[in-house]
Image 1 (cartoon, rainbow, N blue to C red):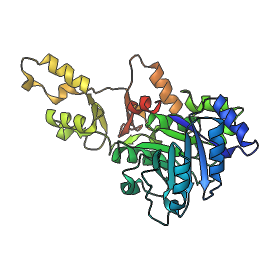
Image 2 (image 1 turned 60 degrees about the vertical axis):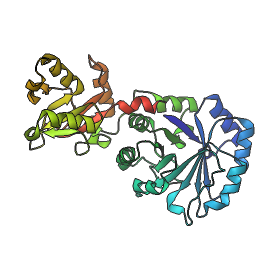
Image 3 (image 1 turned 120 degrees about the vertical axis):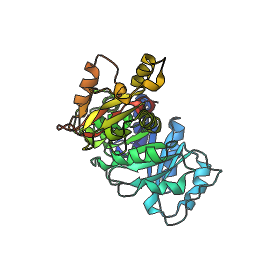
Image 4 (image 1 turned 135 degrees about the horizontal axis):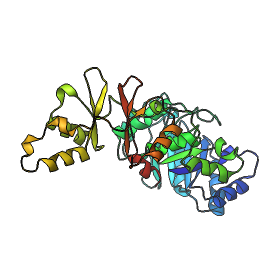
Length: 334
């Protein structure tokens, strides 16, 4: 996951000094907030003279058209307009280069991206725009997941309240870029903050239930519907390589993975029709409780004798609550 440094969050030093510090620490992007202020482009010109780092420009305005000529004259790599402030239709000319995005605040549904499906990404504002140092609102974990499901080919950027733990969770969810401002500049050093934003060991304030895929959205089959065909369909449509098996009351009975199917087929190569769904079931998979913290989850994974790519999530009473997968973690590191 790329780290986009919010350059105006450092209010103590001149712009040139801030940019040099960020360049020296090899930050990925320079995030420039434009609150309907055309003079921001003078800073963009200055940045271009100082370095060649990609510029991540977030514009808050009622009238986006007044920025088009400036964007043509001063190309940036990422352009985002704030959805809630728009008073005119957003039609960015094709002559403007750079990846296009739309930003939404927490109460706004990601469904609005239907209007901007030609854009490259969404920017989810996880705190109040313009409020430095705000706390990440956990509802945005579900917004990230919802957007990923609805628009799988699009990128997700997040701005607001991203600390070390939130950064790990977002990387695991496949977020492409996160904006860091006060966290980056209030640390002992930018280098120390960047290390925290990309390290694997994190201090925990969130539990698995905050960011798991809930069972309603996860591939699962009830015991009463347990047939070989239903298992294969669930694995195929879920696209995660497994399906969770639950009873009529919602209690977890185990899971069936691609590997379980493969092993059963090898046993019955002479008569594939003799395979029963009960043979496929792994009744004692590695699971994790929904109240488990991120740190505890990482320790479980590290101490496992075999690689873990997904974890069924259960309650203390054994009810299936959801799943945590790690398929997006590698994507989030690119």
